[in-house]
Every structure is written in C-alpha cells, then in structure tokens.
Amino acid sequence: MRLMDLTRKLDIKSLLAKKSHFLFGPRGTGKSTLIRQALSERFQVIDLLDSQTRLRLLQNPSELESLLWKNQMDGVVIDEIQKVPELLDEVHRLIEKRKIPFLLTGSSARKLKRTAANLLGGRARMAQLFPLTYFEIPNFDLGRYLTYGGLPSVLMSEEPFEDLIGYVNTYLSEEIEQEAQVRQLGKFARFLKSAAISNTQQINYASIGSDAMVSESTVREHYQILKDTLIGDILEPWRESKKRKAIQTPKFYFFDIGVTNAIVTKSSISPHSDDYGKAFEHFIYMELRAALSYQRIHAPLLYWRSVNKQEVDFVIGDFIAIEVKAKERATMRDTIGLQAIREENVFQKYFLVSLDLQRRQENGVTFIHWKEFLNLLWNEKLLVSSF
Image (cartoon, rainbow, N blue to C red):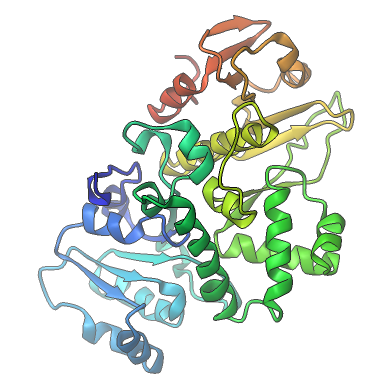
C-alpha cells in the first residue's frame, strides 16, 4: 500500500468548487499528497518551503502575480502560507481580479495571528486535515493505532516508533526553536512531556507548571502554542446543565495518539490498562473531531463533568452525549454520567461506545461497539434525528 492509494475523506476539490480555502493541518498529515491526489494538473502549486521562491516573495509579495500561469489554470495552491503571510494581501487582490480559487495550506496559524495577517475577509473558508481515521485505513488495527496513531508516514513505516520520536524532535526544532516561539526550549520540552502525561484530562495549570518548573502564566502560553501549531486542541466543558453544577475547567487532547505516546517515550500499550483506556478515549475524540470537520457540521464538541464527578466524555451540540469505555462487557454502571445528563432533557441520543459486541438499548442509552458507532459516524447517519 502506498500513500497515494489511500482515499481521504476531505474532499478539497468540492470545497474549492465553491470558494477559496485555507487548509490547515499539522506537519505529516498528508496535505501535499492529498493535493497531488485530488487536484488536477491545472492547479499551480507554489511551495514556500522552496527557499528561492520564499525569498523572492518575502522581498516583494507583488511578484506573486508574475509567477502565475497565464492560462489553463483551475486554481492556485500556496503551500505553507504562514512562511510569507504578507502574500495574503496579494491573494486577496488576485481572487478579486482573476476570479480563480486559491488553496492556502499551513501547518501553523501562529505567525498569521502574530502578524495580524489578512485572512481574506470571508473570501476564503477554513478546512482542516487530520491524521488518518478509521474509515481511511484499510485493514484497520485498533491496537496498532492506539500505540502509533494515524500519521500516514508512520502507518507505512517498519519502525513507527522511531519515526514518531523523529517527528517530535522535528516539531521542537522547526516549529518552536526556528520560529523563536519560546526562549528556553528545555523548559518547553518539560512542559510538553507534562502536557502529554495529562492528555485527555482536565488541565491543571499549577501542577503542570510545577512539573515543568515554569510559571502558571507560561503554561497557559505554552498551551496556546500547541494549539496555534495544531499539535493539540482545547476541549471545553458543557456549561448548560441546570440540575447539577458543571465543572468549568477545559481538557486538552493532542492531535495524534502516536505523537502523544512518543513525547512520553511510551512504545507499547497493554490491553486492559489505564493507558489503553485513555488511548481509546483519545481515539474516539480524534474520530469525532475529524468527522465533524470533514462533514462541515458546525456543532460544538464538548465534554461534561459535574462538581459531584459525574462525567460524560463528549457531547455534540444538543444532539448526542457519548461515554467511552475500553471494556469488552459494558454494564449499566458505566452509564452513571449518561443517566445524570439525561435528566437535563437536552440531548436527543445517548451512546455508550465500547469494545462490547452486543448492541442493546437500556434506560435510554444505546450500548454500541466502536466499529458500528464509527460506521454510523462516517456514513453521516449519526447526527440525523433517526437511523
């Protein structure tokens, strides 16, 4: 199997038929491969990782128009747009002048934010590319995925953990050190490890600061760097519960399970362990986040926890509440959080997703095996009123 043989769920050709787009995604998720696979040869690609091209356009952004083909063009791809954010003014002008779609890719939004770059004022929409999902991987192996994650190059590798270690080192050197995101890389590396250890959990800024030997304010800044460089994202709590007071503290999830494991040098995960349970929850989070993005469903993905420690792993809009258990036999005891949130009378569906093969309905909760749940999700049947 080759990377080019994989079919991705993100349909950028259809997106560009409607409007120009920014396409963001962490390094290694396959943006360049997807572009070659999905777009015609009449899309011109301008690669800002090419030093000569980047230097020319840094010196004079107006040179962009002279680089464009004069005819037979379906659109333009500018790869790694954050390298020359000044180009966005020119892109804005060319969208108006030449009426051609642009695809602007990037592995970090931080430089665009810092420079207050022109984000094209509604002339371009946002899309994201995530690691490979269950639906995109032939002969999906859950155990391997929970250990090594879904980066395409790692999936194909004969030494996946070595490649993951290399990925983490590249992130620290290229995304952080080269762009001078932090003054002391050693402290950031300690923070990164502490953040990975507490992945999927509520963020305790003081505790992580103590472990990394940095201030709480620095921890908050470092989390923002992780978010801006697309290495992870904040999962906010659902705060609308009326019958039980909700916790206000967010959680943090890294963008890929394998990268998270590599940060803490965890090369294997034992079934039935706490690490396996956390990784399984992380896996379902990644699937939900990717599916919502690719299907253009603009409903918030949140979690809920009461001050009395009743918890539901994920809620989506006012549609679905989802609890995740890495158990081969799920019971009603596993639905305590779901039963509590049901009393709010907000959500339409309640799922307990597990390794249990027996699908059943008990007390308003659907017990469902993870494969069946993800098939519903990726076949776009999960968020409709009935299926």
